Image (cartoon, rainbow, N blue to C red; front, side, top):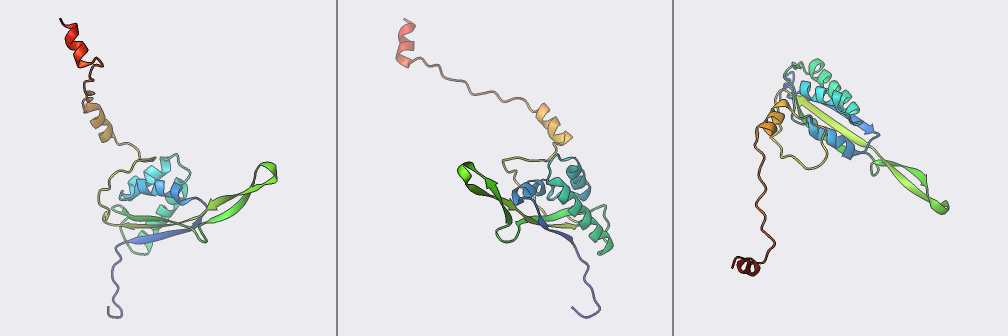
Length: 172
């Protein structure tokens, strides 16, 4: 690239370092907002009853501000294109001592995390398969309607417990 020419950025980044929270807790929230529009993600984070939603909400607002101020992107049509949660330094934890029985002590491992979020004008995330486990995603009106409209499946007919020979002899 020649001097004086600047390439337009397609994503705006924001980083959160040394978050004093375990990566598993933050990943649960990150999975819920990945690929969503910024407005949808902010709404989801605001009303999520999860402690880990607050730092990610602040980080998302920072990424939106970076996109608007540093890269001159319109904030109306931004998506959460990428969100990565990694463990912190040195094994990702600080250690605290927890008293145990008979004068012993055990370590509590207080984990730390690094979070990186990228927002851009187009959703770069393909439709992901739902993973089992806890989720904070709100059910949409459309999914609730589909659940009500779908007929309940019948359970397969169960076989009787009578032996075949006894059943044949009983009919004589």
